[in-house]
Length: 253
Image (cartoon, rainbow, N blue to C red; front, side):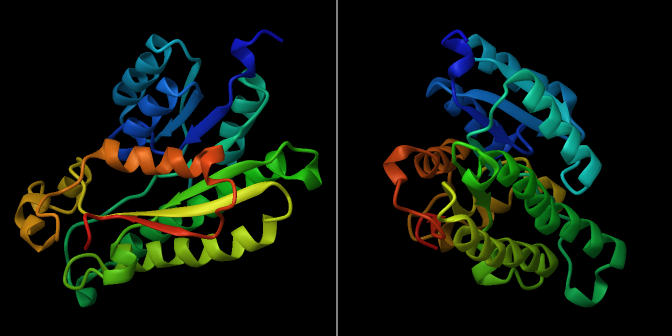
């Protein structure tokens, strides 16, 4: 195989915007081939893929709902076909719904948030483990789950269902990390704080970071690229003895 095809492959779920897109672009700059999944915004995902290719790497942008096991299986089959390897999985895809108190949350909303935010990372990690693990004749790899500072803070009066789904991601991180620690797979978790992304609009408050920034010890919100650097550090050989760990990227909150 030529040297291009030997580049490591990173899969970023929800890679079309925000933290996922920033991670895809930085990964390409660091020499990764990049696969991203998206659900709604194809144009944004294709723009990220074009940026990856402009950086001289190979790209795959594929529509796949990470809460659907059949779509997840198809996504990984496409990666097998195009790249023949996967080295890093970033479980970034997640959803947020309108700010609300608990008693006003609808059941379908709760189900969808847990399906995407909690079950999605488990389904993707399941597929990644079958390819990365020494047990399955893999070469090892890294999984980075994206949680949220809300898992620690609880998001009262705003998104207790979202926060609870991220708490599930954190417990999953701990268990999965221990399960595969001797199989060449490191599993870690990033907790972003208040980051300037489009996601806040989904909760009904596009300017949320500006509203709360004075409560952040550093006095500002974070940029997606600041989270991306933490993700790619955990994915790298520089973090070779780190697994089952949580890294807050929160400006001190």
